Length: 126
Image (cartoon, rainbow, N blue to C red; front, side, top):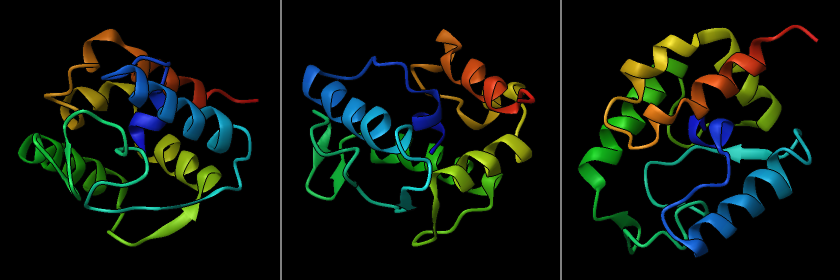
């Protein structure tokens, strides 16, 4: 969820980037009422990732740590469902941009600041 909030169009491969753009821009951001289901295995986002292996990943250990920290910080359980708008609101009310340094420790994209900026933008009053 946090990765989709911070998504800026940079990915692991051209196919991954195209897929993630279709999901994030074409579905989630286009319609915030889109339902999302949280999983602990490879999902539609992972589809074309070059690290995917079946329902897992060559980076399962690192990704699993990230996913567990995200789930704990956001109080999300595997199989839980909500709309994308509800997911964004949950992140905006439970996290501060500075929390991502701890929650996302080990993510190669963290140092670029995209996710921190996106979370801060969600928290801005309209």
